Amino acid sequence: MFTESTRGGLAGALREWRTRRRVSQLELAMRAGTTQRHISFVESGRSAPGRSMIIRLAESLEVPIRERNELLLQAGFAPVYPQTRLDDPQLEPIRTALERILHGHLPYPAVVVDRHGDLVSANAAFHSLTAGVAPHLLAPPVSVPWVLLHPQGLAPRIVNLDEWAWHIIDRIRAESVRNPDDRLQRLASELTDLAPPRPRESPHHLGFAVPLRLRTPDPADGRELTLITTLTHFGTAVDVTIAELRLEAFLPADQATSAMLAELLER
Image 1 (cartoon, rainbow, N blue to C red):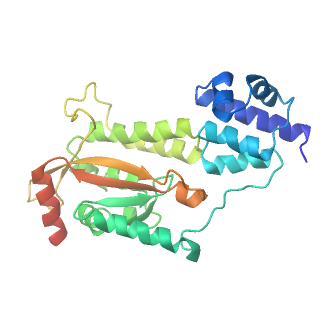
Image 2 (image 1 turned 135 degrees about the horizontal axis):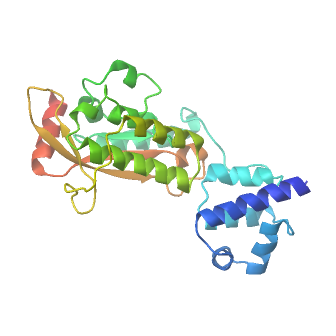
Image 3 (image 1 turned 180 degrees about the vertical axis):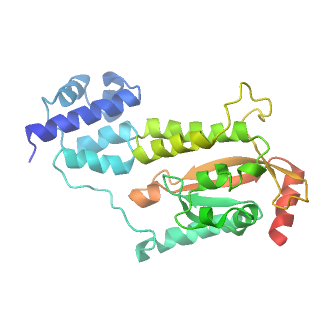
């Protein structure tokens, strides 16, 4: 049943998402195939949208499907997007696909993480790259941002730690602004406490990305890897668990790094 309290909660939530996406009522109406007047009535609580309209509005605003379920609940409807455990037999094809993708990136490191950056799976190259990291940082649940930036993690080996740390922190902050999440906000705050001062300029950018300049695990080696990262996700997923997975690959920025990664994997 659509009550005054649920109407008010939904109206405010939709208005907040529209404001966050910087979309006008007119633009939202055009995207969703409705009228600006109807959008205005929905946001003021004067009109009670149906299930399909809520989903259309949420899709038009690129609301994550976890939060789309919340919008439906606020309107008195049941959630329509399932959240299946990754170890559920139904997701066996997804798990198999992820493992194939991770294996296909070898000898380059790659990981699958959830929306908070917690490790779901990793290939052998990532384990080689993190040799020497404190065991407590690699005990489940493993936070990949913590592994990267913690003083007992990879941080001492990162040549451009000031650049890379703030690249990670800014990315997490941007995600927490785009899709509000208390845990992401806490993570950004905690990593900020670990980070060195923000650099005034970034002379080592590759022109399109912030590289990760990382010393090899063996201190006696003295060589340096130059990596760039890519993020991939299941853009059309309709299951909350799958939609929140991210594949992060660490790719070589030069031939020397490519050769060193292959060498590290063989050790």
